[in-house]
Image (cartoon, rainbow, N blue to C red; front, side, top):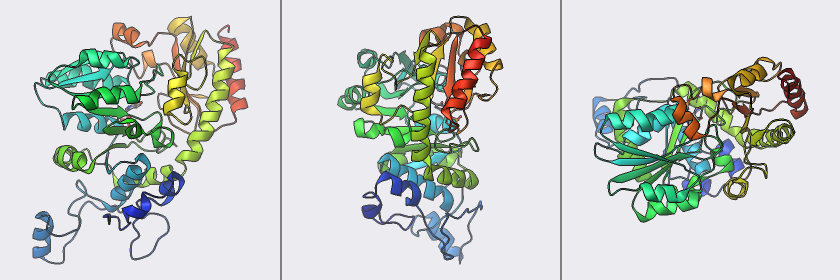
Length: 402
Ligand SMILES: Cc1ncc(COP(=O)(O)O)c(C=O)c1O
């Protein structure tokens, strides 16, 4: 099939991921540039009024307005779709724009959604607050237990929505088991795959219908821009998602799309090196703190499942201190190298205290139910030398008596 980018899908889908990450989606202009061009334009000019009319009628190929199409954005969408093994992808202005659009585009009053309990704070806000406001019923379950999804199903259930690994508890959901339950009942599975990215885990290979991303995280990978993406079948993207996004406008800026295109070129290299660093740092912490939640370490209760679904555990993990918020904040304040930051997926190591930042909008009892204690800390391990990170942590742990 000839794609809008000019590339032939029968060829690009045969490329291996490393090739797709560099060349997938590239559409050269008449200047033959090697690096993808940045098309900073909000609109497009037509040769004649008839062409404008034909494009609006869908009778002529071409772009009409950058809320709907942009060449740089399309290159990114094609590249992500190829890496994901999806028929199509649509990018958004942020991860939350992607999550909101993927849910609101397919749900209406009277429908029901089953969501994972452990999730990014704003994703929980969508499930707990936004959807019920529009008459959409929601049930939150422990996503570690596929049976919990089955038990929560109602005749009006339309969507399962969860993260794996989950932010910040590192809970792992069994993709094959949950997606099979959904498939049998005609329920759409939406997986937030921000922590793993297609470089480590492709939920559609396990039966997921839709994957959604904060591309702000590992896909950009250098903490520069906000971006989001939704992948699914061409039918889902064209007929469910697009009518919502083209009229509500959570569009990704071409500049941000260009930055993420460059980020994807090094995604595999970065995520594998960061995963190695993360394992070294996690193993060091295991000897020093009461609890480490790292899916790559055998001590994680779902280590085997994680390693069946992911080719490496990724850069992010959590650990817990017994001294609650005071000790956790004390540790963060004693760091000299690792930054205190609520972002993840950056090539810099970043540490956050979820209860007082990313999950502070979630009520305390809900946080505890999700498994987020006052002593929990989340660490994104970057590309620095792991020994420098371990020295920084060693110093900070001693400062709080550990
Ligand atoms: C799992 C997960 N989903 C969604 C988001 C939201 O992404 P964004 O900040 O790009 O809107 C985040 C952000 O941290 C996240 O960790």
